[in-house]
Amino acid sequence: MFSPLFGHSPHSARDPEREVDQKSEQDPKREVPRDAESGSEQEPEQTPEQGSDRQPEPEQVSKQDPAPERESQQEPERQPEQESGRQPEPERTGRRGGRGQLGRVPLTTKLVAGLLAGATLLVVADRCAAMYAEKRAEQTLRDKLGLAAAPDVHIHGFPFLTQLLGKRLDGVDVTVPDAPAGRVTLAEVRAEATDIRLDGDLPLPVDGARAARVNGDVLLAFDDLDRELGTPAQVRFRALDRQSVRADGELPVAGRVVRIHAVAHIRRDGDRGVTTSVSGMRLDVPGIATYRPGRPARLRLHPQAAEKISHDKSKARALLAVPSVARQLGVAPEDTGPAMWDDKRLSRITGRPGFKEKLMRANLVDLVADRPETLERVGVDPVLARALVRLRAQDLSERVAFSFQLPKQVKGLRLRNITVERDGIRADLTGSGLAVGTARGADD
Image 1 (cartoon, rainbow, N blue to C red):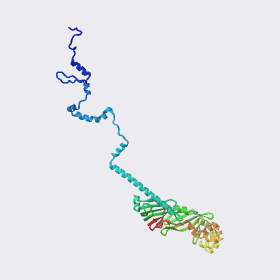
Image 2 (image 1 turned 30 degrees about the vertical axis):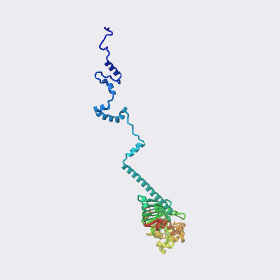
Image 3 (image 1 turned 180 degrees about the vertical axis):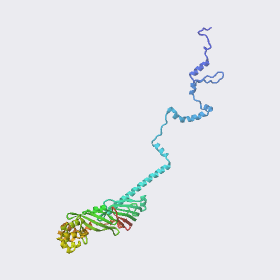
Image 4 (image 1 turned 90 degrees about the vertical axis):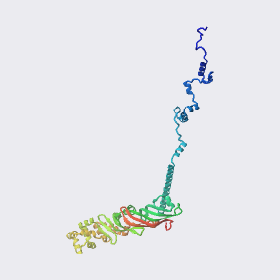
C-alpha cells in the first residue's frame, strides 16, 4: 500500500529507547526513565571520558580499598611541592630567623662564651688599673727626686686589683735613669722591692708603703764622667783594675798642651756613697819633661831630652855647672871643673854606663827658681816650667777625682760590693724595711 519513497522499514519506526539514549547522551544530568517492566532506574552508560570526571564517593572508596584513603590523607601534604613545579620558599633570615639560630646554640657554649667575655673584661680592667698605678708612681718619684725624666715602674703579680684590696704587693721594679748624685750623674739606678705593705684608705689614695726587702744596683758610667769632669781638662776615664780607674787627658798650661795622667782608687764612703783617692798624678810635656806635683815636686827629663843632652857638650856642661844637679848625676866636684874645658874628660863623664838614666832621674825643680837660664839652655821652656810647678797637687787631683752619694730623698738604702767594670763603676744596692710616703717610719 505504501510507495517505495515512504515505505516502512524496521529502522524507520520511532524507537522510544533509542530516543532516550540519545537524550541521555546530550544531557547526562537528565533523569533516566524507569523501565516500565522492572520498575527500576537504569543508569546510562558512561564513556571513559565521563567516568574520569566523576570522583568516587567516600563510602564506596572505603568499601573497595582502605589504602587509597591513607594515600588521600597524605596527598595534601605533598601537593604544594608538586603543584606546577614550584620551589619551596626559602626561610626568612630576618630577625625571627636570627633568634631561631641563636636558640639552636647549646647552653654550654653560651655559658663558655659568656665566661670568656667576662674574663677578658676583668683582665683588661686589671691591667688598666696596674698601668694607672705605675704612671702615678713614676710621676711621684720624678717629683720627689727632681729627675729630668720619669723613671720606669713595673708592678709584679697578677691580678693587681686583688693585691691592692689586700694592701700587699708582690713586688715592684723601679729603674731611674740619670739620677743626680753630687758632681756626677748616676747613669742608672735599679731596685726591686718585694713584699710591700700599703697604707691608706684603699683602693685610693695610697698614703704610703713599706717594702720588706730591696735589692738592686747603681752604675756610674765612664761616659758621664768624661762629659761632666772632662772640661776643661778633656779627661777620659777607663778601667785599670777592679778597684782603680785610669784618667788621661790634656790640659792647657802657659799656651802649651800638657798631657795629664792619674789613677783614681775607688773606696766606699760610709754606706751610701763612693769616693776616690788620686795617685800617680803627672803632667807631661811631650819629648821634654815630666812634672809630678806633690811633696817633693819633681821635674824630670824625658828620654828623648836626656839623649840629646848626653850628646850635646854645651847642654851637658850647663847641667854639670849646677852643684845640686852634678851630685844627682854622681859627678864629684874635682871632676866637674876639668870637664868644663876638657872635652875628653867631659866625654868620659857622659859616656859612663848609666849616665843617661841618672840624667832622667835628676830633679830639675830647683833650676826653675834659681837657674831658669839653665833650663832654657837644656831645651826646657822656663815659662812653662814655672807654670807647671805652680800647679797645686790638690787642684790637679780635683780635676780627676770624683765621688757620689745616694739621693737624700731615698732613705734606708746601702751600697755594697763596689767594683770597676768595663763601662763604669757599679755597686750593689740593698735595703730592708724601706718606708716611702707617710708609712710608719718613713722620713719622706
